[in-house]
Image (cartoon, rainbow, N blue to C red; front, side, top):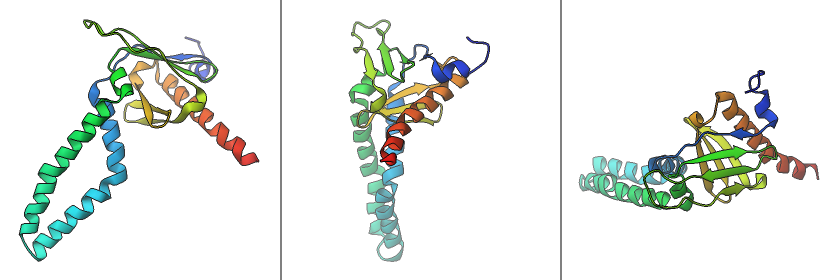
Length: 185
């Protein structure tokens, strides 16, 4: 590691250690994002049923309870299942490491799962132009790429916190570059 701290990470290659994610990480991120977007669609009808049940007819309270305790968990199950069967969520179960090279191209190298006979996925290369977002959510760095796909990297996979910050900053700069070029013309 260079003596200057995090300066090497600004231009050099950033490599994470090997890590794998539990299935709940992708599902939790997806459900949190969708809930932030669509919470009003679920909350307004439920609130209307509760208010209607209190003011007009108590049977509406029963309908609200059915929605809350039967319908919403069923929808949550289908969302959870749909998220966990996506190819990038399945691939994240395998041990892998991420390399951000000097050209800001991401390479994800997958390794065999210990104690299992299943073959790991092929190496994934994400060109810098495919990256549509990179941000921190909780203790993870989330790289959005290729039309809704996500690469989730725990901050603990980086050698030090400066590497995680530099990783995120470099991908943000790559993301902003095409926008700036488009604004000039």
